[in-house]
Length: 191
Ligand code: URA
Image (tube, rainbow, N blue to C red; front, side, top):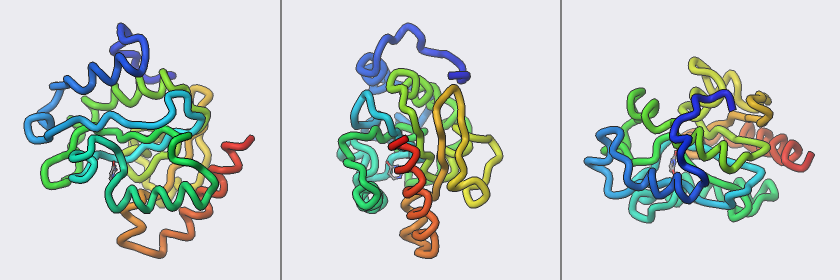
């Protein structure tokens, strides 16, 4: 990948996870009870990247297990994916207090983990769920409504941004566009 190679002394996803679970790079670890590294098939062809864990994710140590996660599971199933065959993570691995948005410093600090996860997993396709992932993986000033459903390619990996499932819980008019995006994602996945 063209992303800055850091933590290059870590040789595989397990080593990266162990390292990440001890992370003290930013202050989020002072208030979060645990790091949510990510889960799924370590050789997944499809990777989904959200923003940061919420309360439920922090409690279980797993990404997307709260209300947004339940909706994501439905979207995955409806578009032909099994959750176990994909890899799911977030840009920021610790829950920001009160579920506030992560700051730029926090996301910058944490991005190295996502970059290394991508290098180890080598997915063919990444879906950015919402703004933060879209800004870190596609373009720093992107707006999700402008780029969602479009195909980008970086370092040979296809990237498709779409709305965050939590956004669908607040605005049902976004369900149709997400459904269209996931039909496209499925086609790209099967190519
Ligand atoms: N929202 C996210 O962005 N990630 C999660 O893991 C849960 C909710």
